[in-house]
Length: 348
Image 1: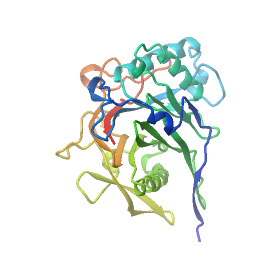
Image 2: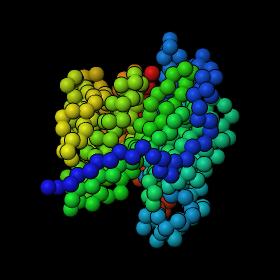
Image 3: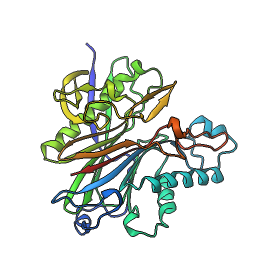
Image 4: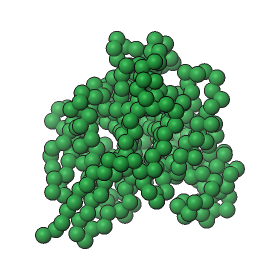
């Protein structure tokens, strides 16, 4: 008989937070001001936030730790100057998107998060300052995920998974970050994901994304049982069309594993990649082998409602009319990322 273990570990793995992290801080904030594009506007008892998510493509600092990818170790041009230029470029995009919460995948460490925060610290409008942030990654991992926020962050928890099956070794998989963003008296549960890449073959690696889907499904279900507003985001390395459709039109079923197999039960969420006519929003967020895919996601559920969504395909981080993202090229220091940022306005 094959032995299968699925263990959900609710522990903090190299988690880092700066700024205040208490609900009390959030309750003291004013919500009466109206910002550009409507973010920060109180809708009765509801609040609204603009959230951006971006895989920033292997964003390493200039210090060699030994965990960097080979191209950064071997390339003689990578150093403090190249890192500083790339930081400036990233902050240019963050300012242009003007999100209340900015989520990033493929950040090396908390030092990069602090450098980004310092580069943005010259903002004269205090309403636009990212005073709060957090970062997490697994032990020994090269990259992790980070969050910058203009509003207080509360209750950061990191969920790892230990999946053991006879004759099948689990690859390194990035943990799920769960936190709350607090605005006025309202809280939005944010779940940040970076699922197993398709390196090694999409079909061969799908079982590991299924494991991560099961963890997310379970945690979303727990929050929904408490009546929470939930927004999931990240690079899922799975196109939106390859998720299981839910029972209602426009819904996605996040499935759980049972005895090591994926079943047709879990929690239903909504995806903004589908418009009101159930057509896919254009363009996608990732362009590979001449085709667009939509592997970067927002899923929302409970008391959360996405009112606006786009894959932000503006210049200078995309190629004008084609909207293809300008991949970062270490050999000449050009480009931004091989993903487009995705942006949504969420009320809760």
